Length: 469
Image 1 (cartoon, rainbow, N blue to C red):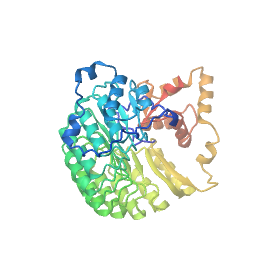
Image 2: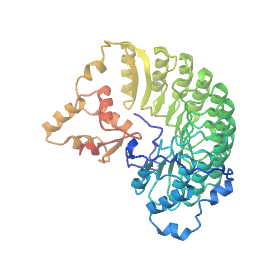
Image 3: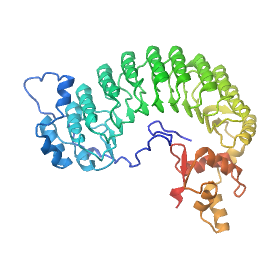
Image 4: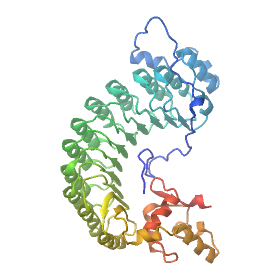
């Protein structure tokens, strides 16, 4: 089961915008870098000046004309070349302007237009060098626009000043924005401090991506304090930062008090075994987290043993990704045996995909899965491993189901719907895996079930049968 950080996985949160982002050819893009040049360098605008700049002199005119005309007028006002794909897609719910070279003025023209836009729900502005002026324009727009729900400003090198502007906006807590991506913006501990101050009292942001920044242990302490107070975040991505033991312990201390966070990605950091110990202690108490990614954190077999102590008691966690750590099969055994001992475990996916296992491990895992049929463990087997996985993958599980459906004179869709007590087209992955394991009509095993789940294009922890209709 693949919970994508960029897509909020929990059904209790607002649904992901379903419209696919239109593919943008390079020939279709008119870059906004050709800003009007002047012989005298303009004075850097203050925050107040930049916000009021969004209020065009002829306000009535700008709200009465169409969106395309408004955008063209805004481009004239700030002195940039219009972006053609923005004009073409401004009636769509998703607007993808990633890598378009907007610059701060091009971003401002977009912001002016979006003040009165009621269609666009998701805006992608990654890698546009929007700088401080661009951030001010976007935050000023959000004061007026109550329709935009998702905003991506990743890889814009916003730094501390950008973090301060965003923090000021978040503290006002008055927009419909619930998903914010700020990956790769050169944020350091000072930026962590100001952002966490705002997030401690902001309850509207449900999904936040702060990956690929430069938060160190001090930043981790700020984030841990924020988690102890925040009552809105449900998904937090802190991967590819510079956390070590201090940060790991601080984050885990925050999780002890947190009652809303469901997904946490801290992969590609340096938790080590001490961080694993802190995480294991949290898992004994936390009843909210359903997804944790601690891949590549320097966790050895000792750390796996410490995490396993938490898994023995935890009744909420469904996904644990712990691959690319210096663990051996011994550490993997600690983890699966902890799940086996916990009769109330809800674990659905354990990712140890870099660990080579033996046939003996697979036999032990078969026993664990007999108790927890919803569980799927992703591992690396030795070449020639003589187990069900190597034999069965040669047989198409969908073909087996199709043959059964033909014999029974029913459709494949009807077969899958029969597995769902509610009879609907969707089903949680764990329940779906368990139902397939326990049914006796078609002889398939858990390795084949993994292929079926991929075939049904599982998203956000749910499989959808409608593609078979």
